[in-house]
Length: 504
Image (tube, rainbow, N blue to C red):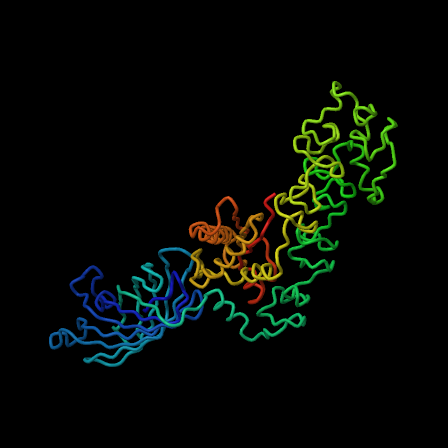
């Protein structure tokens, strides 16, 4: 009759202390409403948690009851001593305040006036959550005796305290399912399952054991184009025309364009867009310095308007009075051809500037004020050590079982993420929560959202990262990275992912 770990079933042992109300009258000819015939008792119980729903309970009882024997006049009261072995089944749900359960077992009772008799108890009870390891418990049970005139009712109200080395109940349940399975290296890729992010599918050690079909350095579970080699900044997709827009989002993947035109050049018509993917790759051609494209007598290298016929006296452009040669930013590239008409730039970049001097013009540079690389869209490359730290954080950030409360061990991991964010001011942080498929999909979705927000709130409330540089979302059980049919897979699927995304 000791309680189970109803709300936070992570403690393996517990003790209960309970006041008993004993009714030996109503089941042997008396009235159940004759409360004056109820007598008191006391119980101490010990329990062992077996899994999320089952507890083994051993209560020891002592009490005084009214005698109902034939010699009633000679013995008004008698003492009873008993002990049971009981099994409780809880109807457990995460984050509830009250958990009901049913109980059944086998016990024995010794009377100081009378014989020893065997009794079979069964009943029901409730646990009321007070704190993580403390509960108020009510239990009522009917006790069928194998001896005549010994059936009785017990009602108990008391306090339960849980103790022992805390255990993650998710892991405890999984251990029951997988205790006989070999957890060494299921996929034979050289990484033990415990540290393998994809333990059921072989992959290179450098990618934490996950496969990479296109060998572009981006594991398949993070690769939006797993069959085509690409670059990490575009989640494994290529950027064939080098315009800073990945091919899977680029309507003109073989011709450099602008973000405003979804990757197509400003001067490209609708028919060209329809036909463009079938065209052969266009190779960059060197600028012909001795060419006069518009035939106005001014070589292109000196012509301020190389594609518009103009006057030699006006640097190859038509007279300023003509609207067609307007040049608001005065960079020598007419507004009609200027991709950045309000920012002075250079001709080779279509009139756009390159503020940080990294060879990527500001119109395509996701980090125009910080020098970067083409692979990173013009942003600084994230160091390999920092990428590894973000990968490890996915498994190192943990929560109390069934809750969105961060464990104390997670604080140092989040502090490290904040330090990484401070090293890359041109990046934003996207926090994603994920769960396994244990429990209902609705509860898992809610839990994943709360856990992602808990990380977001910690980084914001500690003053580490401004809210404007972070976002959070939850995906529940919808995006597993491994099988939910075994312990290691479910462990991997319970994760929080931290992604750095350029701010541009």
